[in-house]
Image 1 (cartoon, one colour):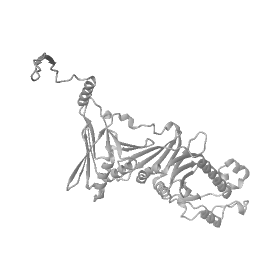
Image 2 (cartoon, helix red, strand yellow):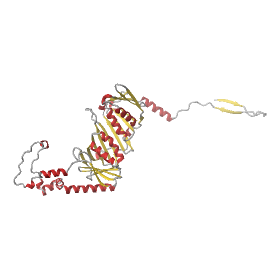
Image 3 (cartoon, one colour):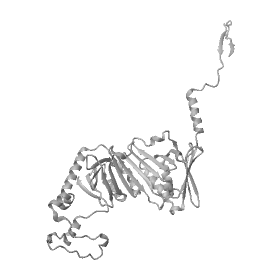
Image 4 (cartoon, one colour):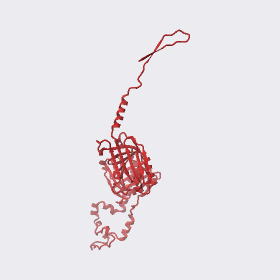
Length: 434
């Protein structure tokens, strides 16, 4: 401590008493708080943590561009999880809609993820980072637009730990273009599968397998008629898409041919049908992914979670199993008036089918068929379809059989074929009321 003395004197006055000021020389450095000490420990831990790096190379640029384009229709931001098992890209919309894209390492010519810590096992190494998927998509699309052929350009990915950018490099025989994308840190990597928005496989009430090209055409038709609310009605051998919008209500019937509607199973404990309701603008976000895919599987559980699983394999790689796109969404609260109207319409349609084809309705009840209509049982042999182009063999008919029991004639068969024309090229649009 230093002590200084100052004397004050006014003009033309006698000296005044001395006034002493004590000035204490304080330290230039303030003592660190507990919070700063904790922050220093965090920085030390991060610096001492192991650095994980990733590198990969591929020529399937067009396929990746298509996959990225299907993601930006949902959200511009995405989370990328990189591990030895492959790359998973996750994006969400409004906490009611999310998408997972799984890319297998076999898509890449070179795929390597490593850590500088020897104790880290290869299966446990993982990188989680956030990116702007829209910027990455624009780069891939611009490269695809200038591609002369598929393997003319190679693409290289690299990442070297926290704080470093995601580097994507495109290279051909003439030039090389290197792009760096900023990444943001994800504090809790486990929270990217949030909102409990996933299928409970122990309580699945609906399972469908349909052809993606037919589903793509159906979604286009729904979009063209300005659908606002979409209802999906599933019953035995029936899959209907009911559109409700400014022009009224329309029903699009999905073809029930086995090659188009490959699988339909209902496991509801108390109903023989399943109805789901969605906002069409949100549901239509799946359009790009469906158009890109070759196989489509639809699931729904008892909690109201609706899942569309798509397998995309539009590239000439025999060893690649395909890119899996899983889209989960929550359905809306049901409009009771529309639900009742849909059920009444399905009952009327079933009664109409039974009145037009009584024998087919009786065929669904084998006990009644054998009891009341014994003559409906087949009495002649049928040749397999593979031999249909050959001359049919002669089949003897017992003399006791009447001409009315010999089965349908050629004219009746022709008339039946004209009545039951199958539409296997796409959905049938039936406007019900306007």
